[in-house]
Length: 470
Image 1 (cartoon, rainbow, N blue to C red):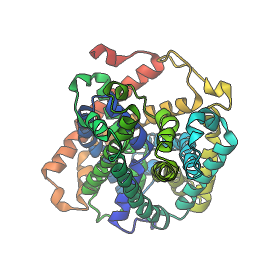
Image 2 (tube, rainbow, N blue to C red):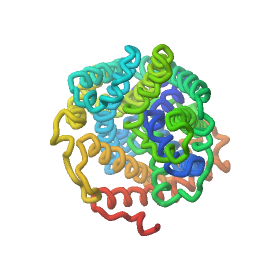
Image 3 (spheres, helix red, strand yellow):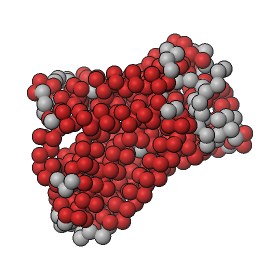
């Protein structure tokens, strides 16, 4: 087998993989899913799924990648199961499509960072004007995609690993600093109490579904990113312990994001519980409400905190765009035999071009803003949302289900267990190894298969299966 670029260190691999997992969803989605899902009760369900379901799938992806030393498509071919390469093609397509709209949102975050530095706090009141300004957003998108391509073009050790060793510690320092400041705000403790006080009465099948989805999606599973990263790992690396560390890192960042966001929410609502419950999270709160909160801190402090927050958001996006671009680039290098630098810029350019309709759907072009009405919806959705539903909500859990089935029943558990034991023979026969073996055989296929069915029927057929269980 030809020599393959590898991570120079276990730390570099873990930081890069954790960076792939840590993204925008950790900062703006997790805290508000938590608030809507019963606070600490949601956190408990989320953590359970992260370790019971997601951890075994992560180990499986890393094992497939390391054993094959190939991209998500080539991995199945090298292992001798060419017919199963469709899983890899689906993963490459998912990475391609997700990055096409993710880059648009990353451009918003970076644009807001620039506005905060310049003290333009009123940008939040004109969010719609900002998103429909396709020239400005497109320019930031080109910068963001260009920076991502620069990292990927330099290879695994010289690009991805070096970037991860800078970005991940910086991201952690920024979020800890923002948490520390947020906790000093008036009514901050009311926000923390709201965030961490469990309300199990709010745990419904819908909340469980969202907690599972948040855990799975936030760990970059099902699209081959970790198969790709696993292919760059030394056989001496204990991929089971590495997967555990990656999982802990991701859920820790998400948890810290909640400790940062809810004091801001409490400050805005003056600690009113009902008002906090009615806060709508996601892009609306991040891009429309927060700039006004930062402005209330005063010009200098507002600029520091506001710029720090949106720089944090940009860094979180950047660590994910790197892994998203690496998936299709690795495919082009391995399967199409295109040199890495050329492949990187070809793929980056194509993804940016495909992302233009998503960018224009946010106010610049009306018909893209009301693009299609799916059977499971009572209104039309924009093009960006449609791409997210297809690539993120549909392809990823389906990919995870198929990877679980392949690992347990096609590749066979013996081969899987031999591969995970390669980095640490002591794990063979251990309780942890037996659990991973059981989970990948039964728990993961059952739950991910169910989630895939629920998503497909609810979104594309208009049948809410979860309602049957209420």
